[in-house]
Structures are given as structure tokens and as C-alpha cells.
Image 1: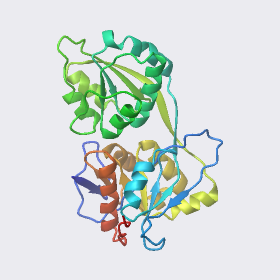
Image 2: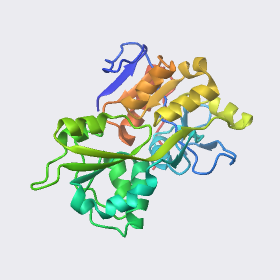
Image 3: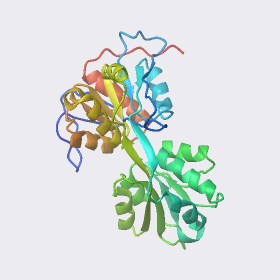
Image 4: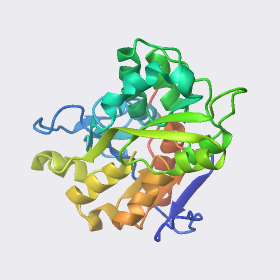
Amino acid sequence: MAMRTFNRPFSAAGAKASAAPCRTVLRAAAPSAGASRCLSVRVESAASSSSGGSPKVLLTREEGKNDKLRAALTSKGYTCLELPLIRHEDGPDRALLPALLRAAADQYEWVTITSPEAATVFLEGWAAAGKPKVRVAAVGGGTGEALKAGGVTPEYVPTKALGKVMGAELPKVPGGSRRVLYPASVKASTDLQDSLTEAGFEVHRINTYNTTSVREVPAAQLQEALAADVVTYGSPSAVKAWVGLAGLAHANSKVNACIGSTSAKACANAGITQHVVFPDAPGIEGWVEAVERGCRDAQLPLPQPAAV
């Protein structure tokens, strides 16, 4: 899998791999509970690794969303710390979703879902609408799995888990309306809708949820998280949260492993220009490879895989 690294500002047009060593931080995600709930740092080490010799990787997605990444990393011998740094809230258009889905068969050729959280929101709206028949496209494997777990099998997944690729590749259904319903995050870019419009579709975007950054965590838990060698980011909100909590100098001193280019751009925009690694195709497999690449380039002691 192609991997990109940079130790300089990341341009909107994309950055070529840098020859300099770099570190990796992965995407941070949000706690599933309200703002008043105390956050905790969860530490889990691979069975075959000692706590002193295994690189510590900070997982920042919301509670319950780090399991796959943690399992993949601990199986390779990494020690994982979990500190949720984002939370999800209802977007301004969420209440519109059930009615739009009830009319989807007649009104829309496709419903496009671009993240596991968007899948969760869609499934709630779909259930409230009476589970009507809809033609759904998922941006990638993780989003597709979330949909399947809720009873919806996507009819299309693009060759690469990127909105612009999804828009360019989305098939036109013979006799279809050429209209697409796009339930999105408030903070989602216009990549998908721009690509769909260019391909000849009319896009109805509704902002069904929002992702916000955690601003405060207990001091003792933050200190434990600051000891991580690698920070992982799964969204721009996670990047913002970590820089706000840890400080820019500290963030630049770590390996920064991003789930994809969107989080990597957020790193650059926030001032993290050192040690950033991300895969060309977003997903758990590429994210793990970003952690491994960052650790190698940072000359951290590589762990031994856990015994099976």
C-alpha cells in the first residue's frame, strides 16, 4: 500500500513523500457520552510486549470506535492508550432524514454514506422511516461494515475510500433520476458533491451530524496520554483537540499517524509539519501501516508480534 510522509507544510494539492524520517499520529475520536463525563485513558499492551519496550500508541476516536485499530496494533506488539478526543452531536438537518428516506426510492438514485458515524445516523433515520428500500453507496469498507451491521448492504463501494473517487465512479442507473441524497457531517468537505456534480448528478446535501473537539480532560489522564510515542488521528477535529491539549511543540515531537489525507491536511493547517504519515487509501490496514512506518522512520524500537 502506498504511504506518504512529510516534514513540511502539506499543500492542498497533495504532498509527495519526504525522504526525511517522520513519525506518525492517528486520528482522534470522540467520547460517546456528554461533555460532563470524565474521560479515562485506557491502556492495553500486547501479551508478548513489555510496557517498557513497546511503542505506545494513543487512540483518539470516541469510546467504542477504537476496537479494530487496537486489536490490529496489539496483535503486532504495540501498547495502546485510549483517550477519546471527539464527540458527535446532531446536525441542523437530522430531523429531515426520515422523511427524505421514505421518498428516496422515487426521488433519489443513490444515498451516499461517507463514514461509520454517517452510517450510524443514516441507520437511525432509516429505521424511523420504516426501513424503506433505498440504493446506498458506501465510501469504504469500514462504512460498509457499519451499514451491514444495521441491516443495509451497500450496492456500491468505490475503488478508493475517498469522496472525490466515489463521486467520479458512482454508476448511473438506467432510467434513474440522477439525484443523490448526501447525509453529511457539518464539517465534511465538498469533495464528494463537487465530484458528483461534475459527473452529472444533482446533489441534495443535508448536514445530519457534527463532530466537535474535546477541550478538557483530567490532568493525570492527559499526562499519561502525553507519554505516547505515536498519536493517531481519524478526523480534523481530533487534530484540533490534541493540539489544544498537548501544545504544538509536543505534537510535532511525536509520530503523527493519520487515517488519510484529510487528517494529514488538518495537521498541516494546525501547524503539525513534522513526522506526519498517512496512507493513500484510508482504512484500518493503511492506518496500521502508517504507525509502523512512522515508528521505523523515528527509529523507535519495533515491537514483537503477540503470540497466537
